[in-house]
Length: 163
Image (cartoon, rainbow, N blue to C red; front, side, top):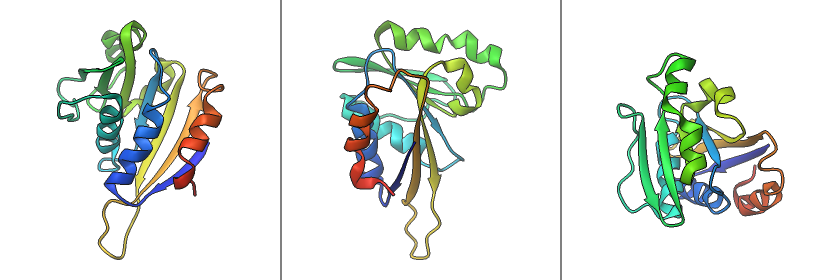
């Protein structure tokens, strides 16, 4: 598990970019945290690092947006509005990632078990006395063995932000 701290939107994007630099086709990244924790901001930094050029918004009502991103397609899902495992299964999210890209899922922690092996990024907005609303705590962990061989590279890539 990696415990990281971001003091700005730019830093959150940089952390996301470090993770994006290590993903492979078929990978699943799950973003968790309360409303306003920075999940969509993280997704935007992740997408930009992969080569997504269109503006990324949270796909809350569409559920999934697919973005061609150079070497991979980024499938960006938001499960906030889903309430059952069956609704998630109907989306066939794992198949999207396996076919041609990476799956990044906001609010995916509620159904993490259904997503198979993945990296979990838990974001939390940090309280601030000086009005800085961009400070975040990020905890990154791997579920399953898919990231075992890349974990050391990820640790080095985010070393500057380790708590």
